[in-house]
Each structure stands twice: as structure tokens, then as C-alpha cells.
Length: 322
Image (cartoon, rainbow, N blue to C red; front, side, top):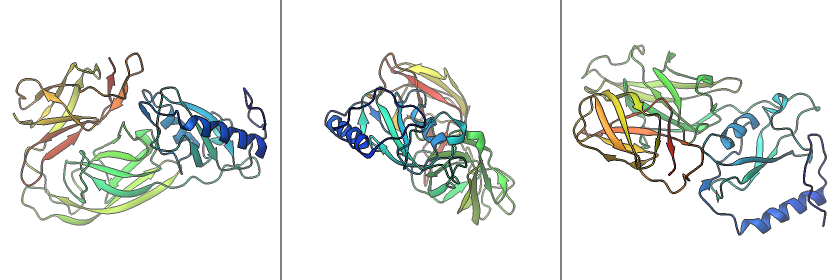
């Protein structure tokens, strides 16, 4: 069996014998793989977005060996390779691994050695509330979670419109930045309801355009603004330890408002006011002491009938392990 190299340089060609040796070594390690870090699903992503997802602060993974389908080693940091498409990965998606584990990628081949292949356009698989409940109906001012693939990990490179009206805000879900966007339904959508009690507008075209990758659309129903729709204007501090408190500032909170951090219910300290909530950051088994703070989605939910009023924080809050 071939001897595994200690270093591979961009442009090196990997033989089938050496590739089999690499796969065999990975298989031998598979039984011992397990830990606190969840490997993201990178299939179909561009190398640029895959690299950003792997190296996301707090994810505690490393970018490993990158080769194309011909066996040539690829420089993952070179701009010319940004548009290569991930065809396979090891460890596989959703595998739990130890901090610092390298994620190895198999990518498409550069055409003629110079021009990158076209980037796959984004996709939309469903729309949800901020808390993750499936829905296709959203009030003006409410948060829509767009779930799909191929979104840019940089929020400003994703343009979201409702019947060509720009979303009030666009943010990536910190937990899954290339597959989940959090956007707010804007006012002044042509034909959309303005006042409470106005008829809903069906068939609103929700379109996502990702820079350099194309666009995708679906349709939703936009309903009238809900009285007392909560908003989040600030979280302080933006980086906090597990078990410590944060202060959430906004509007239209109630005394029985709930807070979820990384989809885990946080303990409320005291009684929320209309503009302020103090909540305790939960403990998370996958966030280790001494590692970089981890981006965490924060959702505020106000009980209402028939469904709770929810809003997600459009900024980036991070949890530090203790």
C-alpha cells in the first residue's frame, strides 16, 4: 500500500493507489470519530462557501485535503478555485467529530485548467417561522426563515425581495449560514395589506438572488400587520458565557415572553418589560471552554392566538463556552 504523504502541494497528482490509501486510513479512523462538532453538509456548495462554512468562527473544524475528480490537489485559498463545486466530503455530513478535525473535499475539475465551472444557483426547499415551524403565510413585519441551499455566507450578497420590494432586513442563520436566511417582510409591497383586518395578498413572489450564482423564487401569502409584533433592536453583550445573562432590547415584549438560543429555551430572569428581557444563556455540550465563541441564533416568542409572534435577532450573537 502507498505511503501517505505528509504534505500535498497544489498541482500534485494523486494516484488511485494513494487515494485508496487515504480512504483506507480515513476508514480506519472512522470508528474513533466522535465528538462535539457537527460536520456541515457541503455537497453542491461552491468551494468558497464550503471553506467559509468549515472555517466559521466557533465551528472548531479545519479545512483538510482538497482534490478534484482527476486526483489533482487543489489550492482551496486560490480565487480561481472559488467556484469549484463540492462533490463529496469526508467526514460525511452531520457526523460528530472532535474539535480540530479536518474536513476533506472532492471538488469538480476546472475546465481546460483555467475557467471554473458555473456555480449552482441557490435553491429554496421551504419557508418557516423564525423558530422553525413550517409556514407559507407571514405578516408584514414578521420574520421569514428561508431554507434551501447555495446561499452566500455573506448576508450582503443575498438579495431578497417580495414582489420586487426589498426585504426589510436579511441575515444568515448563524447555525447554518448557507442554507437558512432570516428576512423580515417589508412594508409597501404592492397590493399587500396595510392595516389590521385587510385581506391577505396571495401569490407574493419571494425571490432570493445570490451574487454570482443566480436566483430562485417561491410564493407565499402576506397577511396584515399584527398588532404588537415584537422586534429586537439590540442584544448586550454580543458575546456572553454559558450560564451568564444577556439583555435583549426591543419592543412589544410581554411578561410571558420566551427566548430561545440555538433552539434551546433560555431561563428568563425576573419579569420582562415591554422593551427589555434579561435571559440566561443555556449550557451547550458542543461548546467547549477555551474555544472561540460560537454564533448562536436568538429568537423571541410572544404568546398569541392563533400562533405565537416571533422575531429573530438580525445581528450576530455568540456564546462562549465555560
